Amino acid sequence: MTFSEDLARRGLIKDKTFSDLTWLDEPKIFYLGVDASADSLTIGNLAAFLLARRLLDANWKAVLLVGGATSLIGDPKITEERELKPREEILKNVEAIKKQVAQLFAGEHFTPADNYEWFKDVKYLDFLREIGKSFSMTELMQREFVTERMGEGGSGISYAEFSYSLIQGYDYWQLFKNHGTVLQIGGSDQWGNMLSGVALVRKKEGKEVHALSMPLVVNKETGTKFGKSEGGAIWLDPQKTTPTQFYQFWINIDDADVENYLKVFTLLPKEQIEQVILEHKNDPGTRKAQNLLAEEVTKLVHGQDQSGSATGVTKYLTGQASIGDASDEDLAEIRKEIPHTTAGDVGSIIDALVQTELIPSNSMARTVLNNKGIYVNGQNVTRDSFEPKDFQNGRLILRRGKAYKDSALIEIE
RNA sequence: GCUGGGGUAGUGAAGCGGUCAAACACGUCUGACUGUAAAUCAGAUGGCAUUCGCCUUCGGGGGUUCGAAUCCCUCCCCCAGCACCA
Image (cartoon, rainbow, N blue to C red; front, side, top):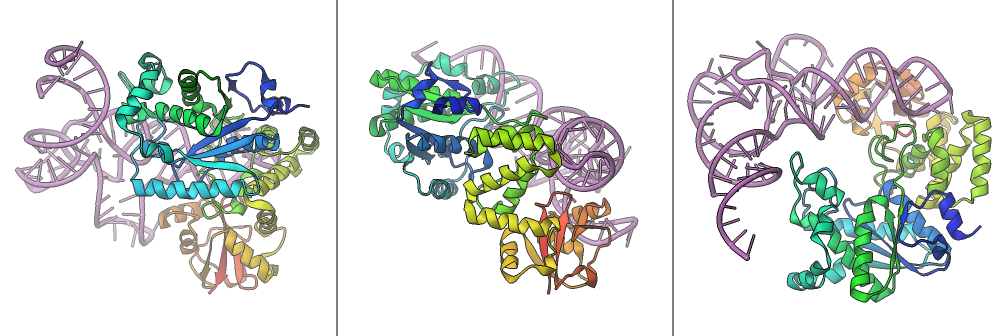
């Protein structure tokens, strides 16, 4: 099976500017850009980065761009104008994302880039003359985010966000000139911006470059955008979403999506995926496919060790092993992976819930407690304080709801 | 610049002097159901205390009033139209 066939079968290709897929089979140089709208990437960014990884594995060369300049403006959303973030905050975010990208691609060869490098000295008039002239207003006005936001019922759009596409287009031109990139990849929401670059390079250089977009990952059952329906964002930063929580997220994926996710979010060969899906269908209860998915993705993002400790910690969260029997090393791991605090042997459960941020406020905690949503060592409780027998060897696992990822370690003070 | 419409909790959207912590819908959280998930049903959804209650919210600031999300002034922002400009 050729590289391009593999991509196609994994469902990784939505739109492309080249007609023949085999164009991908001959390695060239591509680029992938992200903006730093937060201080960490999320699993929403993951699919594109894994595509980059696949290209690298197929001997392509990569330029990975973090948008120091574009982040200052903000990619226009279809609904409303973004709030302009302070420069210092964006600078911090950019640094964080750069580091994260470097970690994610540790051991791989790629060229890091930051569009701020070439934008910081761009003069407005020069930009208008060189770039602005190459863009058709009529065309820009037809973009979905523009038509949605202008006119009656629209939320309005600033000139800054309107121009975002030009900035990204300019990036492609720069990268083409300086690094020889001839392909840009990204999510299908970036398609319009990618085309801006393709068109600009054609106009300025008379050369043909290409773009490739991936379908947005959606939940098959609900049709919702990936990551949206699962509560808060799942971050790649282990400080924000610990490897165990990360691992648990993938364990909880429902059957309908698991095959698709295995294809998109892991590097496993197609045969292996088909095999595990087959096993999974025979006996869905064991959640073989989800287990494999969780293990693989956690390994890709957090590394082998973290993946191992995530499975280790999970043992205690699920009650497969008693928390009282945990070794000192295990405990140290657990403390890193899930929130923890101390409490007296008759301490308040509500305080513990709030301290560990399992629940944001006391009232909420009380409500959830009354709704039978709190578990101590896997046992449902409705009383509002711990009892001495709850502690096994001076510790217990406190959980909100059924999902194991919302667990915390409570140790006796 | 003028004229008109608008800015309400995570989102959409009611309310238009007291009975407003603010209808309703969606979302979110918890539970039941399910091997999961979804769907469905039930409860919860500003904060503190959970017993009467107290505190902070309806773009910002100021005022009128016993009392304002609701009235007045002013500022900011958005939408539409017109004018100006080209």
